[in-house]
Image 1 (tube, rainbow, N blue to C red):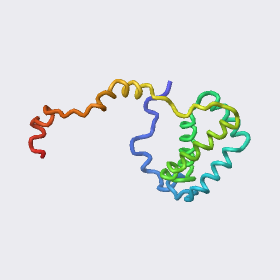
Image 2 (tube, rainbow, N blue to C red):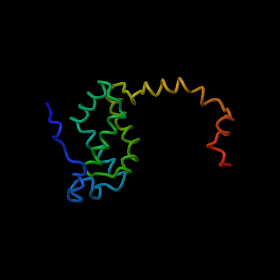
Image 3 (cartoon, one colour):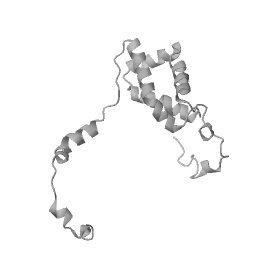
Amino acid sequence: MADLFDAALPGQSLTATPGSMPMERPPQHTDANAALEDIFTKLTMPKNIAKLTVLLKSGTPIEYIVRTILFEGVAQGKWAVDMALMLAQTVFWMVEAVAKLKNVKPKLKNFDQDQYEFMARFTNLLDKETKSTEATSSKFFTGIK
């Protein structure tokens, strides 16, 4: 059983030397093309294609794989978070191309059942453009013109 008190103290990470983590230093890649070339080189290595094929065949959504690749790059200091967001679509296409190459029908993203049920239940409220006289006449809105 894990010890309940065996954890870092709040704020303990703030006592570390600034710049000691790779993501706290300037990124290795500041050019998107160089970062994409780095990702492509690693993604197309035979052992990584085999691992990727297993993940895709097991039903892991491409979205999760891409987020993992990009987050790992940020954590290792290869690129900044904003560049990771710019790279996402192209890396998605790279992973999708590997799936096509290996004849795997990939799951693109995780279907959010709760979101679907919420939207199905309340979509009718979005379609109606009703003006609520009760809301605009309440005491809260009396000073607002």
